[in-house]
Image 1 (cartoon, rainbow, N blue to C red):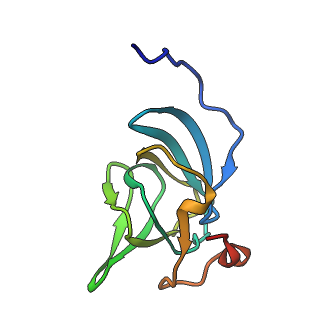
Image 2: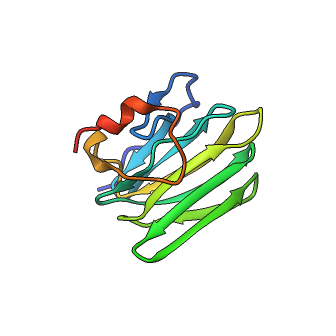
Length: 138
């Protein structure tokens, strides 16, 4: 049995991610999903971790910083167009836009995003621009 073809154009509508960023959904299939994430200029996401999904990010616009932590391994990296990174499940992460243009990246999520309860609130290195997200459902 084949999966049904999917075709579409990215919508200008977005959904709010649990970390406060804007997500524009592309498509999902059995093994994963694809989306575009935007963090407006000067903003910092909430720090979160994922319970069951792995992600690959590819930056297409803007400049910023991404913090990641797994147990005793921790790093902060500069991101810009052309940079790709991974967010394995259980990794604590937070990102911030350091310029006056949107920070945009493509996200491959494997398996497909299961819903808002996937993201767990964490303590990150920077104050968030989205203080209400600290009360995420777990």
